[in-house]
Length: 383
Image 1 (cartoon, rainbow, N blue to C red):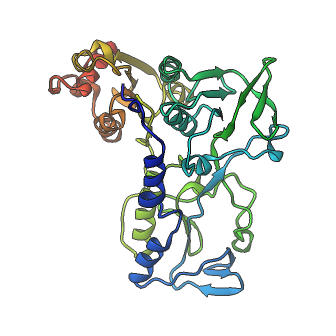
Image 2: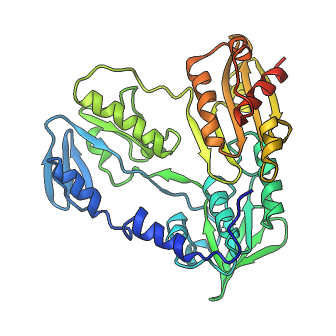
C-alpha cells in the first residue's frame, strides 16, 4: 500500500493544487478559452426571466436557440445543532488548505469524506470519521464499506459508524462533536462531507413553468428541461459526478445543433472512490437490483487470493463482486475494490452496458497475471 514517504510535507501538494490545478482558484484561463472561441462571458448572478431569456445583474440576454442550465450543486449540510455557528470545512476548504490540520474530524463516510480522510492521515494528521449509517460508503456494496473500514483502521484512522452527530461546539482551539451513542469526539478541524445537493431556488424556474422547490430538475433523454431549455450536470440529480455532466453536455450540445443521437442511458453509470484501495463500481448494487424486482445472483472473489494480488502483496486488499440478472443471464452491476480499481472497472462497465451474456464472459481469455483476471474467479462463484 502506498503511503506518504517519511518526512513528506504537505507544501508541494498544496502548491500543485494552487498553481497547477486551480490557478489559485482563478478561472480566467477558462474564460479566455471560452471567449477565444467566440463566446460572450458575463460574470454575475443569473436567472431565467422567461423562455429563452436570462438576466444577469440587470442585463438581459435572449437566446437564439436556447438556454443551458449547468449550475452544479452545493455541499449538503446536515441540521446538526450548533453547526451553523462554527467554522467547519467543506471539501473546498480542505483541498485549499496550505497546511494539514493538527487533527481532523470528518462528518460523513462517503466518497469525499474517505478520500480526504485518508489523504490527510497519510501526511500525519490524526483523523476520526463519523458516519451515521451502519457502514462506510453506504451507497456501495456492504462488503466494500467493511473492507475500507478495515484498511483505514489499520492505517490509524478512527472509524465511527452507526453514530449520529447530535451537536457541535467550537472553543477556538478545536471542535467537540457529540454523538447519539453517548460520547463525543474532538479535532482541531471539522470537515463536513455529507454529500451534495442541487439548488434550484433563485434560478427563475417559475418564469418557465418549472418548480424551483423540486429536489432536481427533470430532463428528457436529450437533456431538455422545457421550451428552449436544457440542463446538464448535478442539478439534474443523475449521480452528481463530473463524468455524468460531461456525458450530458455532449448530448445537449448535439441536440442544440440539431444532430440526431441516442438518449441518455444510465444503465452502466460508473463511479470511482479514489481511496487506496480504489473503489470502482458500475450499474446496480445487489440491493438496488433486488429492489427493482430482478432475480439476482452474485459472485465474489478476493483480490489477495488472485495471482496478481499475491504478487502485489502489500496493499493488495480488495474484492470483486458481480451482480447478475439471472432471467436475462447478464450482469447489471459490478464492483472492483483494489489497486487501480477505477481502471479495472472499464471492462466490467462494457459488460454491463453491452449486456454481454455471462456465459460468454466465462469463456473469454483473461490475461495472466492481471488484477482483472480475478473477474474469472467471481464468475465461477455465480454458479
